[in-house]
Length: 280
Image 1 (cartoon, one colour):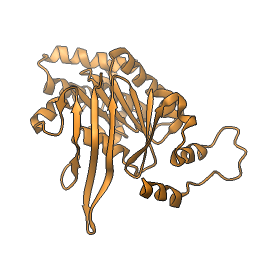
Image 2 (spheres, helix red, strand yellow; image 1 turned 45 degrees about the vertical axis):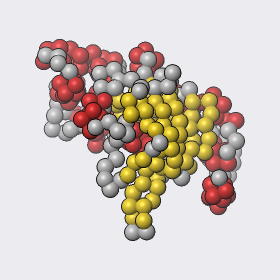
Image 3 (cartoon, helix red, strand yellow; image 1 turned 180 degrees about the vertical axis):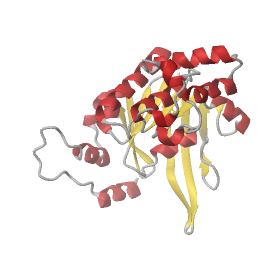
Image 4 (cartoon, one colour; image 1 turned 30 degrees about the vertical axis):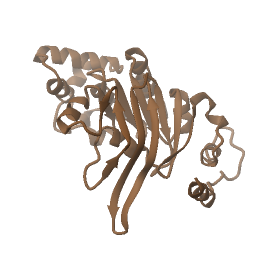
């Protein structure tokens, strides 16, 4: 059963030359599974995630034939209804905790604020729920972290805190927008393992937005490849290396390996890709 259905989603912004579309009529469905959306910077990945949560404000314009979440029409839902959904049933983990966490609020208070907005728990119950959420993302000393400010924790710890904030209400769908882009390789793996455990244990749906093909292939069930605002390929994650579209093949070929022997990495043929897009 589909948790999310999107048909002909378009996102555009005004320019001096007229409106420019950055997402150009994409369609997909998502169940309680892990879906990866990959592509280079500017391909429309992040705009797709923000459009689903209706976080794109004027003069940006979002249209779709259908944008349905678990029977709820996200296109016509009043803003008050969207505020009730965000965090409670739909959540989004942003790229860098330095810009997402309030620098003048203690970490525990920030996470507790989510519970206070969406629920009726008393102060003691909220504190206990926050500590449990911090433990769920493998923070060893949640009591100490609860009282700290964002500048007192590392980047990897900050990202874990952001994930705890997003899952404290056990949402049905989590959108993770480049959640490991600011982290080193060893911490990346830890954070993604945490997200993977939470999704599996709680039966959530996950949209993982990234430019790292190998990472997405490892952690997702299905993959959508975006180029210039369009979905150019869809495949099972384990079959990514059998992809046929020239853009996907170009991305795969440009990834260096540990035993790299090529003097130069291949370069995407932009003229060919734009020609294919025009033909489509």
